[in-house]
Amino acid sequence: MKILYFIFYCSMVVNTTANDTIKTSTQKRDVPKALKSFIEKLEQIKKMDHKQINHELDVEIDGLLVDETKTKSGRDFYELFYNNWTAPENAKNYSITIKELPFRLRTTQIKIFINENLVYFTILQPRYELVEAYSKDAVKKVKRYLINYDQIQQLMSGEDQAGNGIY
Image (cartoon, rainbow, N blue to C red; front, top):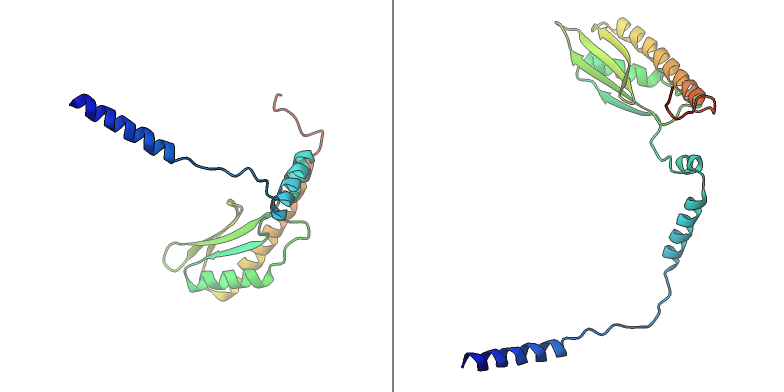
């Protein structure tokens, strides 16, 4: 009896799998225009030099100014910095973050970062004249940093400075 059930079960499995076939189409369809242009761009990128690729793929927000102040004097510092700020001509790929941390009594610490590098630090008192003077000083130092940073990058990218890392 068990053998009959086994044979019946096997015949059912064979019959159901024979009917469950998938028909595939052999017709060729046209490739969409967007896909063709994407493939052409990839082929162009493969032929390009690495420096050209990096230059063409540079898509960053230049000159982003982030406010992370907490007090009125910190906010005044940020607003004065923002009003006095003009970016150097050739500066690119940078963001400026102004952070404020509470300090003793009514004073606060102001830190300015460019691409997460500390550029300017001061302890700010809540007197408007001092806040204005510190913000002008900060603008000068940040501009000087960006100008020097660009020059250093240009010098380091020269052929005589490029190497394999062996002294």
